[in-house]
Length: 109
Length: 109
Length: 109
View 1 (cartoon, each protein chain N blue to C red):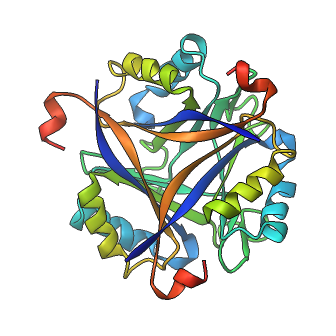
View 2 (view 1 turned 60 degrees about the horizontal axis):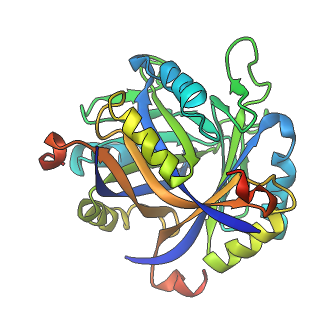
View 3 (view 1 turned 45 degrees about the vertical axis):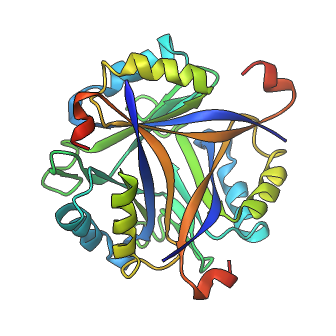
């Protein structure tokens, strides 16, 4: 077992913003990140203090959507620079992590 | 692009505990955290070893619910002290991360 | 309030792989981790570059599934060695975190 350093990123959006599709397209086609996973939250609130939740009344109106990916630290730093004009400040968080890999794949990453 | 240090927190509950609503109210009204996102897991088990899953038989009975938020390290430390009487030990995890911000917003955070 | 060091792990699967059930069984019965939570993503792509999403056309065909757990660093290192033959390289990420505990429980962990 070998591990390489990666930077993990989570981007906080809401469904109503319409930013998910262009962001996914950008990460997939342009930035070519290793992999991306999108999650939908069931409730939440942001800086506005407004609650977003999946109750009967406002179901699916504006739920939280989180885009998660990881890649090499240098590559992620470049991607974050690119995204800074696309995503509002305070909505992108990142941290260092270890990715399990193997000897053969080490060169490819 | 600028980054500030934040502490990321994840709190592990289950739906049947009835703790989500009071916790969200507390984080929103009292602790005034920057933002909170709630996720529902589709399966899981805890210290009891009991599985919680969304199969036909026990759907929605006691699924895992995760409350995630981040804020300044000092503010989070205070919040965690407050929560220690509300959430059972072993259910709150935290780590350091970087939040993308910008020059203008730096003072507000 | 006391905190102990733990290693947080996230394992990225897709539903179509059929690996979730044996992995959960292994983590529960053999590795005896403290707790596991499973999440389903609503969309994503992996190294293949192929998108997996929950649209009408391909709903539930091959959505991302994430298995998350944390435990003592030494115990997790052993578990990751065990899993390295079961999970493809590049799908297991881990990082250090702090778990809130209390004085009485410290010995049990």
